[in-house]
Amino acid sequence: MDKQQLTLLLEQYLAGKATEQERQALFNIVQSDPDEELFKQMISDLMQKESLGFPANAEPWQKMVQDIVQIDKGKTAPRKKASVFTLYRWVAAAAVVLLVGAGVYFYIDRTHDSSLAKTDTSSTFKIVSTSAGKQMELVLPDGSHVWLNGGSSIRYPASFSANERSVQLRGEAWFDVQHADKIPFVIRSGPLTTTVMGTAFDVRAYPDQQTMEVAVQRGKVKVQSGGTLLAVLEKGQLVKIKAYDHSISRDTIDISYIAAWKQGDLYYEDEMLGDIIADLQRVFNTPIEIKRASLKLVVTTASFNKNTDLRKALEVICRINDARLSENNGTFIIE
Amino acid sequence: MASNNNTVQQGDEKELFLQVAEGDEKAFETLFNVFLPKLYPFIIKFTKSETAAQEIIQETFIRVWLSRDKLSEIENPGGWLFKVVSNECYSHLRKSILNNKFYNPITTEPEPVNTTHESFALKELNRLISEAVDQLPAQRKKIYRLSRDEGKSIPEIASLLNISPNTVKNALVASLKFIREHLVKYGVIFFLMLLTEKKEKIFTADSPKQPLNLLINETARK
Image (tube, rainbow over all chains, first blue to last red; front, top):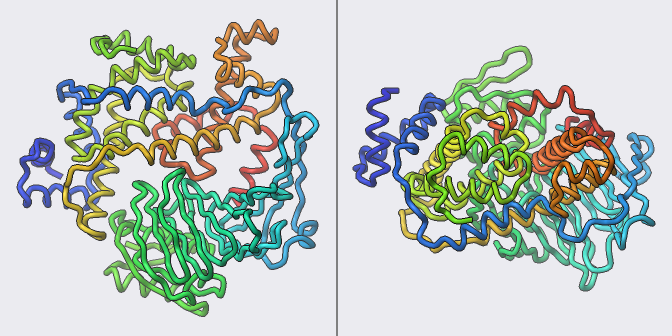
């Protein structure tokens, strides 16, 4: 990378004077794996040269800084007595009675002495996790079914409260929710909140993937980010949310594709290769490395049925993206 | 805090960072007001978007606040902050290039000032942090609450609980670390980035592991 040329391009771009060609040239450099450290250093240098400037409206900024220092305070007055936590850990054998299905998992039961807490009704939580390549079906206290995909975990109370059925998901799961009048079922996954009454749908929100997704197989689902309503979905609709900027796109989906992973099928539509590979690693529990970073960002559509082996799948993906596949000590390498 | 503090020199910056490291909210406000005019114009030019600039500012300062215990180690605070922001700017550029190329090409149109995402993110963060604090061992939780909710200083907490100020300090450091780990575990990784993680490793070696922490870590790793 030519440092002087890049500085020039950057300066033109910052000044808003770059021609379309210059803009493209800059973007191409950014995309083609530049020396990141050098690039960031240049940005930092240019930033320090910039003269001071004050945002037009100071008020929202003062609110922002006030809000930031509040984030690590408790919402309510501190309790006089601290709760006591007792930990139980149950291994697979003990939990099998409760949980139908296969999979290697851990079951953590966290109880705290509720006599010390104020009116904490959600004193006991269960966390169920699947390892990569494993799936598991479980039944929640209200009779709703959850099918947990590999490398995911779900946290839910031993008994739901009277006005909300709330669970926390990390990763991907398909839900078949029992209808209960006026008691919404709420799934929190990272920044996403999905609220339903009684329906079947899939939520995908792996922390290491760029795109979160909710797809509805039956019924009606509301997807929110905090107070912001992102989408109300009906049968056969899906919404994709990009983790980094919360931009959303809506689409329709053949309902037979929803949670295809439950049948062992893999279906990716317009997903970034990095996300697809992350998913394949989870499904096949085999390390896969993408050597060329720009490849991770290529948007790809591919589907495989359950009998495809990993090598075949990767060969297809490499062919589509003009990449090369090799194997080294059990690790697949894409470059 | 008034923004007429923008003339602080580097020595003062260092002092400011040390105060923030102690959990001083006023010092943090000053820090914010000193650096905002230095960072904001550039970020606007770089991202060509007010919303993006706001997000970058907010995420940067959330990260600074939640990593405040590390600030005392930083030799050149100003330079460090510029680095953090340039990191954010770079990843923003990469992501928007990708967006423009593969999704609907967005023309650079002026956007309304929007605080919805921000307030949501803060609320969710607050909830996750409370959750983490609830999982702290009794004594640590008490110290943390006294410090954050009741605004007590380290010496005040020490004399109140009849322990040494160092014990209080260590407890606060360990609690912050636990909070950060909790946020990462629940996928709020976009708030805490590598710059703090590198140093984190030095801390894991000597910090005592709590039982709950261990268990959850194990589950997460499997």
